[in-house]
Length: 260
Image (cartoon, rainbow, N blue to C red):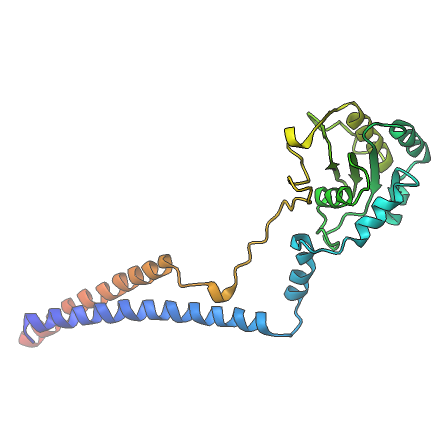
């Protein structure tokens, strides 16, 4: 075999391996995308689809406001709303002190003791819970304090109580003691107009701000990434180049052995 043919064969092996590696990578991508599309179009219930359906409430602008309206309406009779699951961590003396602190405020402060969990329609986001309650208040200006499971959040409506820093609470404090500490801090905080301040929980239109954004891509819109194509080509170059070059040296060694 002439030298020209040997190099032609090496180039052919190199090109075949490079092309084959790239095609294999593309086929695996297309296969994975087809599986995702089929799963999305299927009515079959899986653990993942149940989880996705549940957390949709956090991102859905058309969420059911009934729960938040009921909490907001309860403040007409009492500035404190207590979820039954939180009642065990409540002290009556603290509640009485909270009612005293919040009585006759120019900008009302309402307190909601809620069980925050990633199983609720806000996915356990206390800030979002506070914002949604605040959005349903009949008041023009008010503050909502949410005390959840090891979390506190403040919602604004028509006014922003600027807390320079969160008040210090003891880990052994009851939920009601923590609420009282926060109420006193909020009462002493400067009240600002939302137009002149940044609301933690409401946008300029008074709608609750969703802190986390859903970034799920539609699998139909997915395309084969250039990085994978380059990676496949590099793999083909390394393997194909090695096979082609190694083949030439092996052929030379074999022919020399035959001639001896």
